[in-house]
Length: 136
Image (cartoon, rainbow, N blue to C red; front, side, top):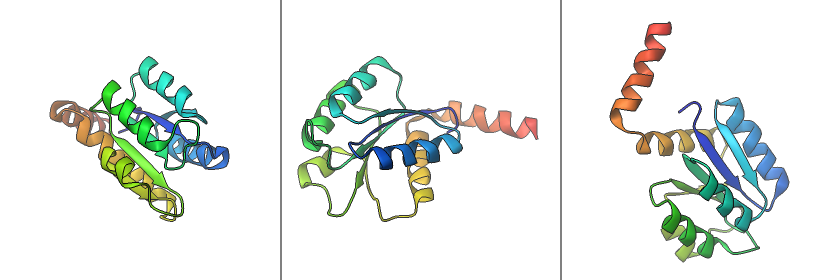
């Protein structure tokens, strides 16, 4: 959904910047953080439509971060990017999608789009589609 706000948290700055660039090219507004603590502050302070979290965040740990995010904003979709090995079972159970970093990048955009759309009320999705059709 264009204009949606995606929060990306990862201690791998290169991967974080790649995701930011990819998502912004596809119409998303992107906030980034290289630490879980800062990411949680951003989640509290902003209206976030989806979160993409690296599976190996080191300052707090993926399990603790996902649990806190679920308590703060239980309806925000959580997408975990697993680099290399799969995330621990506890962290994987708390997220909506586990995405492998070996997948093509455009598939991450598809996952974000589906996750955001699943959280958007039906009428809002219908209205957005109607506006797009009337512009054409």
